[in-house]
Length: 197
Image (tube, rainbow, N blue to C red; front, side, top):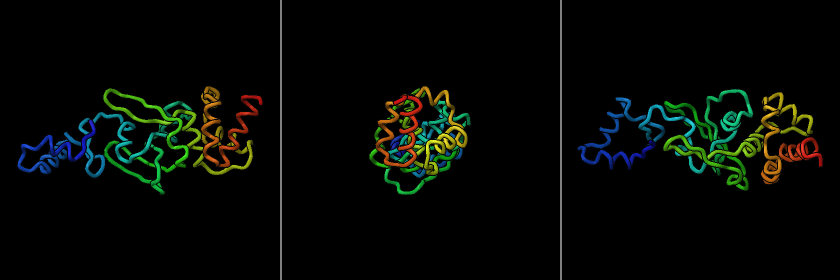
């Protein structure tokens, strides 16, 4: 369970020095420090479910979400999240791994997310359609549908079968909100090659 320093002080209020007790529990491995003032008491917690408390608001996206949905074959080591109004990438490293937060446009931040659970843990995550749009927003800009296909399916190794299982109508509605070249090309590609418009 994720615990704040305030919660731990309350838990240890009978101790003469609750801060010393927290430090002793950390030294003994009973508590794991996630970030300043934030702790986890379960050493087996799934790292992905510990991202949001590190920086709020945020949600799991980019490579972590793409891997979760099987859109890319690689197992992702760094937990990647979309953030809002941070203005530059933020990185955190703790015993559970490396966490990276990258801003996306505020107009799309609250679109296309869902929740996943693992026991008592809950994480907000981009849908696979949104995760791909978020990623295209940050990947190098291309200038043709041909280059977009090269970027997605060759360079970034997006699984074509998984891509074809996406809800393209949802993806188009989300992609429209970014006002970015890669997303305009994505819409064009989907309409021509998958919706045959």
